[in-house]
Length: 161
Image (cartoon, rainbow, N blue to C red; front, side, top):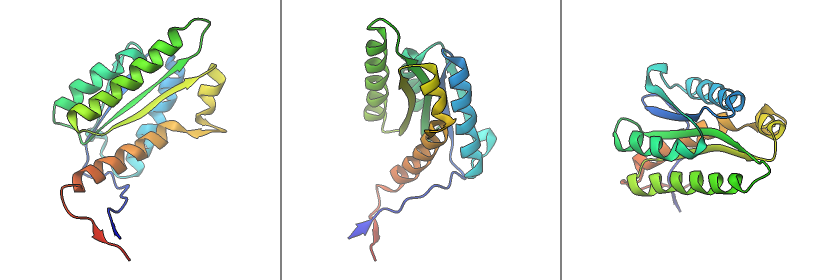
């Protein structure tokens, strides 16, 4: 079996991070974990650009513009949609998920999905360094790995052992 190796080295890669301003406490915590992880993995702070958007629904449009710019090996999306008493939650979740998927499909640029969908703020905060890990860090790792993998897919994989 031939394998494309996993690589979590962020050195030399450029990232754009799209962050929802809505639910700011959660978004800020996600961004801090994401940035910390990218820097720990070797990314330069000058190679991380952040674009704030009003809410999660606006994330796909900003992600598309950044992906189409050709300046980034990966885009990272961060935010949270917290369930309320109306169907608005469902529409926003579908819109942001479908929109981010379309950006990847249409541009070929990896877009790591770090938009939390939770029932309440406590669940969201539990995913920002609490009992459910840190989704900001996890999505940063996914972005690094996919940027490296996509950069290698035009060549044959390595011989397996």
